[in-house]
Length: 304
Image (cartoon, rainbow, N blue to C red):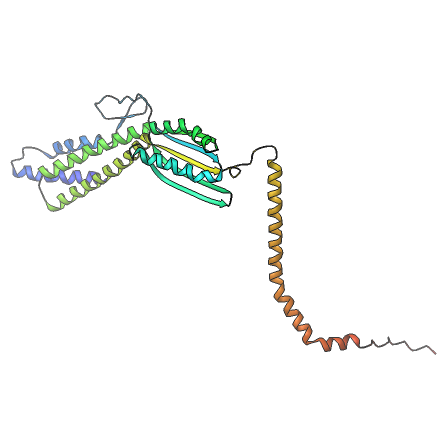
């Protein structure tokens, strides 16, 4: 609606200028000219659902644009966890930001004999392949093993094609508005309205281009998450794991019960002290009442 108002103002502005120049062109001609890029703002759809510009051949996508996510779980001795994390982080830094980037690195000490670490990376396909090929050997050399491996992907082909078409359409509209602003001088209010619409269109172009850059970056650089855990801290294995878990629950239940008893004692202790003080103050009266003999029951008079 706002764009239609700007087009109407521009049409009136051109009509006034051409009336001063002899009326060489009429208002409907300008309206038709401005309507062309407006119609191109809505991209057409090809038979397969992709967005194409009018009059141009439909884009052909030979390969899907996939954003991959790799997740690995590594188990190793406690004293080797920090070395593994540091080694993978150093290998990523040595490859350079064009091949690998460290986005997060965390090592948490859960106890004297328990460590956990998480290393998050963004890496190219070639670097990820080298990591996958060398990871089993590196973990075995450190006395550990790879406990889990998961690969997932998201197809961004349609989103990227649609976003590219939107950027092209908005760029065409921006160029038309800039030409209109340069070639059609007029009233200050009309010029301000066109400039505001031009600023809005440029803002949409910048925002959409940023979204497109993010999606392309996800396709070019995969997400890699390496989770490290000391032996026995990830998950107990073997037939004795239920018994180990039961003993751990037993100790936990005892600790919780003792903690509850301490809390109850903490609540009752002030009241017990208060009750004991009251009894001590009235001890003589209580003793007198307890030591006084009870009167014998009254006997009914005998009948004559």
